Length: 195
Ligand SMILES: Cc1cc2nc3c(=O)[nH]c(=O)nc-3n(C[C@H](O)[C@H](O)[C@H](O)COP(=O)(O)O)c2cc1C
Image (cartoon, rainbow, N blue to C red; front, side):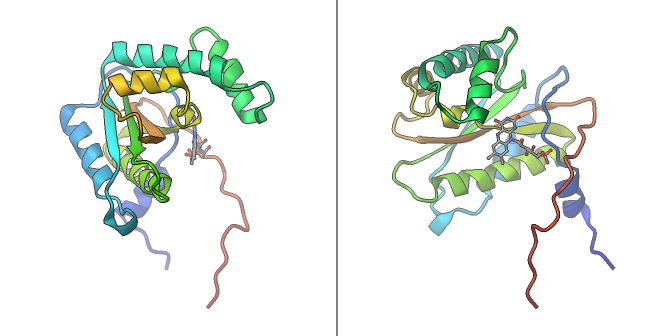
């Protein structure tokens, strides 16, 4: 019989949320999300990550402006289609790179560390699953990674306490949700078992 339990149900139920409801992640919920992050595994137990949680609406708006400017300045016209699409969207009125989520958690890591991205990605998945377990929505946000070398983005992130030399790995948008999000079907043929 197939094994089923609460953890497996949370893993299956997690979806990328791109529409958030009114409200904020509570201090207790934020603590739980950040605790989940730091309990992730890390290469050689390095734990060299930094999780910067932003809940201030004005800061998030300013960061969105900085991201929009960064797309214009930093993404060249011959970049790959996914990024050019994002650059086009960033020009549109109402664009918000983290879908107006009330909380954004930015994961950065020390430079010249081969496992920087792997460690942060594992921590982010912990955040996503913890969010799901508390009835919150979440989404992986890649824009700050794309723009990690843009001067304007770095300048603003450093004013928020993210060291200049840190690699910006990724970010999690988190917030209350009031709807279900459809699950993209999983592709066949992606598992190989040798017994
Ligand atoms: C490395 C990575 C980068 C992603 N970047 C973004 C992003 O910038 N914006 C976004 O809306 N979703 C982003 N996603 C979410 C994926 O689009 C999403 O996980 C995928 O469509 C499957 O949907 P699900 O998460 O609901 O299962 C990213 C996911 C990963 C793993």
